Length: 241
Image 1 (cartoon, one colour):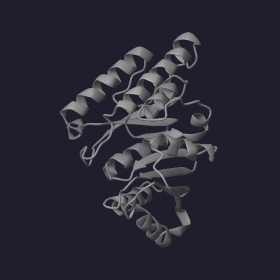
Image 2 (cartoon, one colour):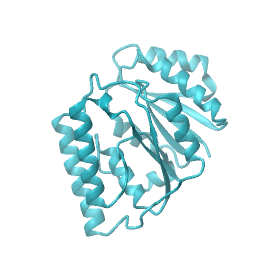
Image 3 (cartoon, rainbow, N blue to C red):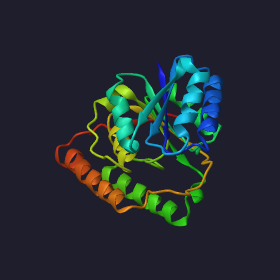
Image 4 (cartoon, rainbow, N blue to C red):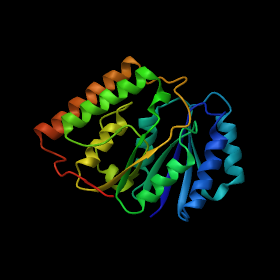
């Protein structure tokens, strides 16, 4: 099974090189032979593109660069990637080095024996009081409405590309991961939920914006129609120990 590590980078000149180095260390430690690292330069205006090119020059065999002239956002970047691939496992990595190496390692090891992996941060306080409690409330509401069990639907994940490719994901914004995970959790698959540490705080976060709340409302509406009215995704996935 080939692993695709999609590094999402928007103005990450400060952290991109470190993110890449630590990811390569984890890949080596977990003995993954068949893999590709994709640096997704999402319209950066700083030196992110230059750093990405330098990384590719030094590690050409397993590195690819995707460049957008304008910022298209996380969800569209992932959707565009999935359109071009049919199988393998997708590991989404933030370019700001927000995941500890041991966290990524635990996720990869868990992915060896299950269809997909979801995760949650045990130091949620790094998000700040308001964001941490808001995301907790959002997660509780989504889990209750759609009858799924997860500590954090928006956490880092490892997804099977062939399964996601079959899903029609309506979200084009912040609710993308939650929509994917809810549908996977109701698709009769096997999954593992792991915990980990967040490296960095929430400086510069743009998650609390009006358009994000609109995306959440739209996503909830579509999920209600698909799951409650049309009775799709009615086979609950099984948690693996």
